[in-house]
Image (cartoon, rainbow, N blue to C red):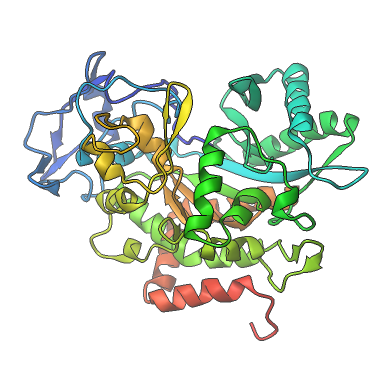
Length: 454
């Protein structure tokens, strides 16, 4: 995933001790100005509160630093390596999970733009999907010619890394660039162009081409090769149990998304609400998936339709985001109720599909009895939730179909203009503030289909 934070030091809750002091401005707050008052100690993580108590019984907030609109925790690192395992010295608490999300807060001058986009590869002579062996050769060629570092799972190459960019493979071999956190839209577009140039330079010599579209227009799921990644085997077996279109989502869809920062919990809530309310507009503007297995499917965005019957426990419009009490803690409550897929241990994915992260926090996970999660497990779990807007330590706008390079540059421009400009953000809030949940869902449903009356 594209990471938004600028600090890139791997960490976990159990190998770093963060001591912080709070400054009082009527209520306990810690702003960006307070960062110099932070002390770091490389021991077990303990958050020591010097001026009052952050939480009290049952996870309820007392003088909560989150809902006052100020960021309260130092961003100690970007997303830790999600395949690294931290040694557990004490179990995670719900407050730790909330603090993890809140650590994404950063002052406006440090906001960045992270763009992700996927595309379908095919063999130019037959139009057949690329086989894994061809994808492996393509990745090897890009690594050698353009100095990328290889990402391996066992003996298989499954991606590339270079500086703050990464290339990864979706379940059906969809080729994804997760861009670096960049300061301007011009930089994001230059990054897109550079990536497409590199891919084309190696792929054309191999007789391979790429198509930017939201849903595979020609081949059925059975025709799509499966990538050798352990987490995808678990998802592939679980998906048919919870929805009829999950395998289509995995193997036949492509998207473009942008990841954006927030300065505080209040700022996160405002951007989350505008992002959800206007996500159907983005879906309509970037709709680009009208064909299935060589025929028109009756949709403008069949990719978006697929999410309506993938897994309702982890997809959709999230009505609770518009509740007056919504904040980091509310999202944690939601995420804790989403069934798990897996846990990564000893370089292998352990099947935990359908199990409860809450049980995991109690040491009662059936697949790993007596074992407790670390922050890497929490971060991995957050990546298995698929709403139209997703919260990590940044916000992901997820409603657009994949498309040609011009649209890959346009999607971040749309959302940066709406969410990073205060006047635009407030205007969007004013326009959408009286929209009901039923109206927003109706809008999402209507923009998907090919309708003459819409």
